[in-house]
Length: 135
Image (cartoon, rainbow, N blue to C red; front, side, top):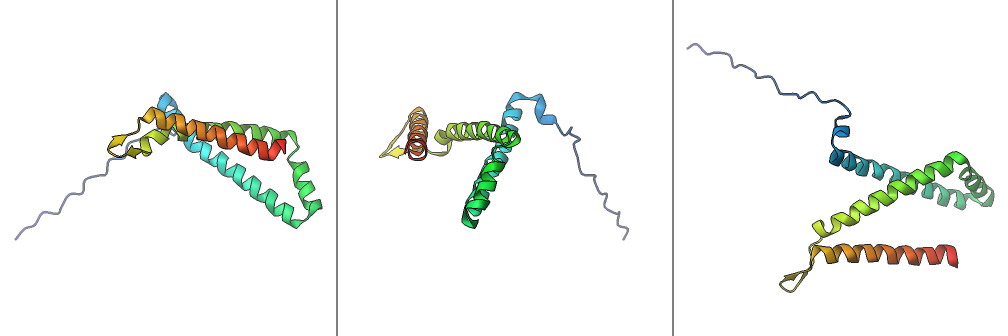
C-alpha cells in the first residue's frame, strides 16, 4: 500500500506594523486606556513606598517627601493624574454595559446607571477631599 505523505500547510502569519493602532482613533483610545492602567499601578506603587518609608521613621519619610518635590516627580504626577482621570472616566462609561440593574422584572435604564456612577464618584471624591484636605 502506497501512502502519500501528508502535506503541511504553512500557518498564516499576518504582518502588522508595531504601531498599527495609531491608524484608527478608536484603537488609539483603547490602547491609551490599557496604558493608563500602568500609570495607575505606578501611583499605587509610589503610595506604597511612601507608607513603607513612613514606617521606617520620620527622617526616611522626609527624604521620600523631598524626592517627590522635584520637577520631574511633579511632572510625573501630572501625567499619572491625567491617565488616572482617563482610566476612571472610561471605566465609569463601561458600568452600564457590565452592570445591568434589575428591579423586579424591570431593567434600570443604562443612562440612570451612568449618572449614578458619576454621582458616586463625585460623592466619594468629595468625602476624601474633605477628610484629607479640609480637616
